[in-house]
Length: 229
Ligand code: CA
Image (tube, rainbow, N blue to C red):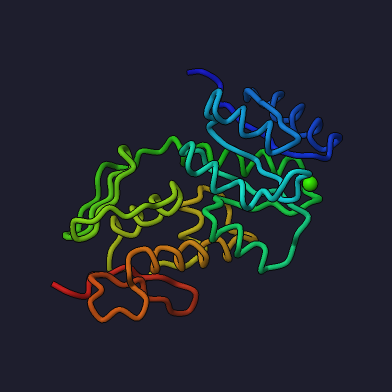
């Protein structure tokens, strides 16, 4: 198998170099951009398997650029930023970020996150999940609800697939994180909260009396169930 390709977008050159050396040593094929203009060019040339995206860049915002990444590729995105405000983190996830690393960070932590995200991006699920009128097919990346396509990020798709394979079960948030994200839940509970929030919105579960499905939450646990037949 060819080495997985990672695009790093970072304007702090010493950090860019450290990340590049570290990930190259781990066996990844790494490309680097220090501006969004360069990143856009590299993204078009060869879609990466993963994008590490700094938020504050000289020619714009990584948050804004993540929308471009979504349009041009299926690559998962890890935001890397000095912004540690919860609001910023929420914004990153709302834009479809798959994970979020706050500077300064330990390179080993970066390696763990990268490996986990790539592992699940490769994941094609244990086949299609179907609970009519909802179906999810991770291998084709298609989600349909009541005949309509629902656009999900790779992570949202994986999370929904997981819920559909485990319906009507209260599952603790940390267990969800470990099963779906493939990493220890130590400080990532908020990631699950954000993804569930987006799934609820995309599947019209919020304040909608005609909802087919519900993700209920109680004591930091979630349960996916069908509520209308
Ligand atoms: Ca920066």
